[in-house]
Image 1 (tube, rainbow, N blue to C red):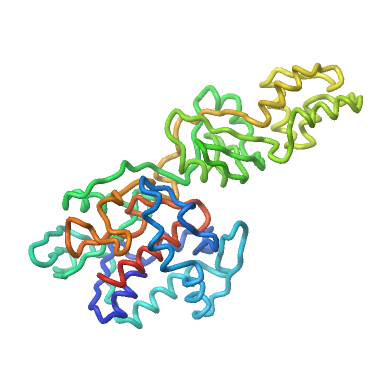
Image 2 (image 1 turned 180 degrees about the horizontal axis):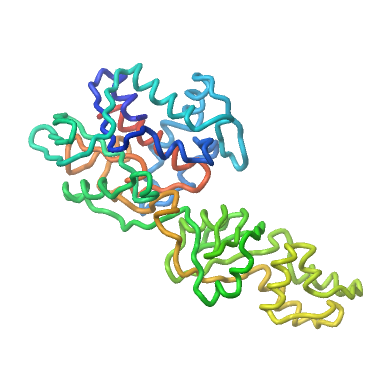
Amino acid sequence: MMCAIHAARRGRRVAMLDHSQKIGRKILISGGGRCNFTNINAGPANYVSQNPHFAKSALSRFTPDDFIEMVERHRISYHEKKLGQLFCDGSAQNIVTMLVDECRKAQVECFLDCSILSVSKKENFHIKTNRGEFSSQSLVVATGGLSIPQIGATGFGYELAKQFDLKLVNTDPALDGFNLSKSDLSVWGELSGVSLDVNATSGDVTFRENILFTHNGLSGPASLQTSLYWQNGMPLVLDLLPDLDAYEFLLSVKKEGSKVDIKNVLATKLTKRFADKFAQVNNISGPINTLNEPQLKKLGDVLNSWKIFPSSTVGYKKAEVTRGGVDTNELSSKTMEAKKVSGLYFIGEVVDVTGWLGGYNFQWAWASGYAAGLVC
């Protein structure tokens, strides 16, 4: 829609083909139905790609302020939830309505329930659909990734890229929860519903967010953020006391002469259910004043750097986005046009640019759509 708006404003005749029966379905379910439509901090550092510089051009030319201006012009009220995340005060439908209104003003023709049967190119592109045939000088692919197939996500964009001999970066579900192994789940599964404020690290990247234990493993913002960087076999490292040197804290309590059981000392900083289980798993018990310093040092190290090895992410059914996609080396970073195929553009999630949780992926959609819309 963003691309269509800006292309049509240039006087281009634009047809928008959508296989869904309802426009903007992913927008409508985002942010718990309130649409986290951008993040005021969005910049290249918040995105994962084999080429970390690729997103710079589009993001610099259509910023969060540009989208906010559009939101305010349509008198949509919004608020910052946390960490720069902007949400509608009302419904995500407000954002869809805004984009549809702008499309109508620009005289974009929208065809819903429109299945693409084939795409070919000679001089122009020729698109056969169940709603007729279309011919165009330019073709923009904004089909998203594989995430949330229950609302219509498919790999069509990737297949189209391959048809035109464009390389792909391997895809994986991202911004997703983790499954734990059966053995780990037998230990930690009983903590389902427990939430902890942690520093979560995957590879070289750390996020300060909450992690949530589930019946299958781990979820919550910290899990979703780190899943963007996680590869199979990697540990997830959790600092369970991110504001403390855990050993120094435990030692200070011991030196006070406290006779409180170690699990109850932990419960002053962690939830009781987790503290009890953590003490049990680490085979430490008894009043803290009876424990020696090596025992406290060992426990402190684990508290500040607890390694857990997920067996997998939950998968595309729950993942908010798809990591990977059309190789950015195949595209112009300024226009999003395929270098090998004149008039063919790829924008949004179908491209190997994936943002953090918190409005970053919408901002990439708006910015990449804008960039293509100026030239296609």
